[in-house]
Length: 474
Ligand SMILES: Nc1ncnc2c1ncn2[C@@H]1O[C@H](COP(=O)(O)OP(=O)(O)OP(=O)(O)O)[C@@H](O)[C@H]1O
Ligand SMILES: [Mg+2]
Image (cartoon, rainbow, N blue to C red; front, top):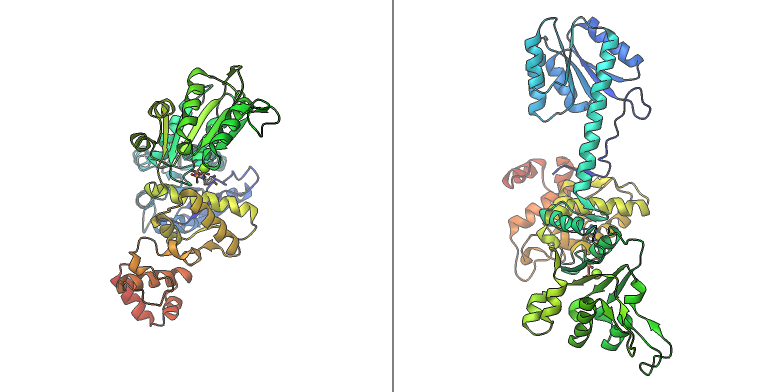
């Protein structure tokens, strides 16, 4: 896994267009050409590097990552075509303009097949060089930007982040709901999986986003209170009802009502609620007048309502009525692919509030985050990131050692996750696992410096290397 940082957005810009200067690698074996082209491009504001053969070109392209490469095809040591092939094979996608001899159309075509984006024929005009270069960098920058935006759009819906197939399916359903005036939706998912976020997003992207979004937590209210909250009550409807009270159905007006923990609603309230959403009418408690129910309904639960129906704890007709549009949020452990994305998202989020140096997450830390089972789902991940960003804001990146113990020891069996690392737990340990984990942590802490890692572990560098090989750690 590569280090992930938040600044993945393209930052390149043209030499001629303010901001960061674009960089060009000029590769030609003829000193005169190298010199004149470089001087010309420097004059235009480019950052110029030079290479005098194919091998140098490959090396510099790997280390410096220029924005574009001007590549002569005929060179000693490693010719341009081979250099191009080598770069593409090792994943370097920098746009390349090849320089061919007059009349060498075949090699220009061959180079295009290998991914060159333009070519210049010798002898060329220096103005032609800048023109081509500008076009090529511009196109590449645009392509990068489009790719980035497309990625970003695909991996989120409003404030909901996720690129796993499961979340993509959720987003697809939500997009279909966008035009619906009064949707009835049932959101199911474990605690912390994002049910409330989904409810809010359905409202925020619907045609009635400017109307109220009101929520009621069915778990925290008694039966009488739920009814008077939902339907309101007339003055004198019951002992404490000294004044008329409008219920949330009225308050929501043409907006959205979010019924959280609907599984906790009593059977008799369920009956009244079903009647209201079926007839789209309701009465205040103690009232006689029918009022219209104009709001959309989003209900959420972490229970399996189908099995609640079987056990007689939830009305089947209400279940069917609500489940017209079901949205299921799988637990985070079943969408491990989203963990890194969410972690970086939360890092960015908290970094805005908590000033510091943190730039990214180390590969080892990211791996541990991905391996952990997240019983508290996204909420737990968010809390972990808030804690880490607060405590380690002055570090350059989040390291494995910064993570809470339960996350660090994730994926190991119970026996090998000791609360205090050096006390042998009751059930024993798998020594190899412990050793490997310590090795990884030590290397991680000193940024893979083997001498320092060996020192941390009290062994020689030779012993460290032996163990790294034994555990397949490169
Ligand atoms: N996919 C996601 N992208 C970004 N943030 C998320 C995502 N899922 C959840 N969150 C955040 O995680 C936290 C918990 O989410 P939420 O309150 O929606 O969970 P819930 O399913 O309603 O939990 P509970 O059942 O405990 O009420 C919130 O801060 C929410 O913003
Ligand atoms: Mg909730």
